[in-house]
Image (cartoon, one colour):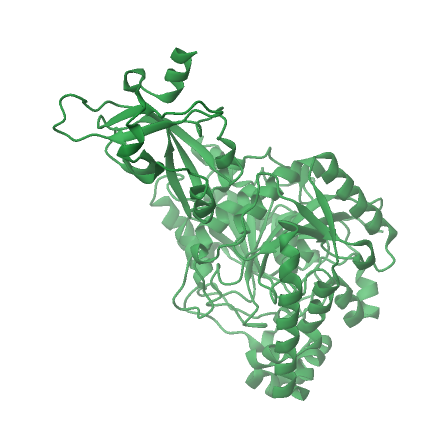
Length: 612
């Protein structure tokens, strides 16, 4: 085994917060950093990471644009990123791993444009399995892309260069695409976080299609916190992409504060004879159990059967359709393995397409009920890993093995995150994939963030530290502020109704001086307050400021929360002392008829102290 990773001259910590801090302190500028990264990239030329590394002149417009703004004035100000070369960057050729196919786009892909507008700087266009057809990183006329940990092992694909560039410290994050696992397999083989977003959340406008109905743009990151920052910028609806979806239209099932984890049952686990991979996975499960997660074994055969549809069914026809005219005229110029896969689509008929559609519908039906038992599934990302020589000997068979746990996810409309879980005995990285129904992207990243440091201390191949979890980062932008006044306050008996639904404490404040607070009639077991808005001209009962806590609650959790609120209480608009309105607990006027006016206390927490 040959390990050739050079760690003697590496750039500084490229995590997003650390770079921002270096910029803010004046220790570093984007211009200096980009020059360093270009020099370092040249040292890794034997890894065949880049198809096009941006020149000094090509970097200049991005640097000048940043230098005309204040330091860190944009979400990703000065953050370097790498782009898979089937995603357009304006003025730079897009090859999709095929020189004969290349064209020079006038505009960047939507996702690239959003990232650049947020201050990110492109480093280069990364190598890939030709036309994103493969999970191996060996199917490129620009050379085999080598694993960041072992030069003789595969990097994973098709987003090979995107993963290896990040693992070797040449960028802060990178973009790949993921149709069958291309954003997860390379992450697993290079000790990275790999986010495969829900379909449609990141625009595919300006991306060379592989299987257009199933393609997503993926994010490689050193940790889940960085991935989430990138996702926040890139996950925007796009009217130029017919498959684009808005995040708030996806309403997956609710999760408790500690989700129930499903794993494949013993009969469904496949490791292709790799005892190291099998041992490592069961060790990972034991670690999850030691962290007090409930683990449920789930019959996994429906998912395994669905995985076979992507390459063994009619969806191969989309690979042909994406480049049909070029393919018919240039078939001999393609990588032989890629060409043979795409050529197989010529034999498919409309009947085959319907047959595949029926099979997928049956799979969706068979798997839907399983989500009643668990919140998130965890599988090995791949059954095993292989050397470059092994792939040369069996390019199609071993590629199929790698897709065992990845091929079905876009077909069944899941979000997924590849998570590093440590190293095998042979010192190669290993990992698992977390997946759940579409719309769980932020939840999966939050869970990955909570687990990451439990398994590994470093990211990539250059030992970038894994940060401590920061769960507050992962609040959905589709959340609602809610003011609580009584038993739902922090430390009070009903607070768990908020926390179990992903609620997050934001701040403590007061209402406007327009309310009265009552202890409602009843002896318990839980005493309840009633907040009532008074008439402005009511001199007998003037309004006062009442202390409240403001919480953030995911919109998709509001229905189940509202169902728990007994009459005469309800939710309505509540005016705060600063004049802005939030949803809050209010009481119908009839509810206070036999209650006790406790407005003088200033709030329920104070009243409970006085009362005791």
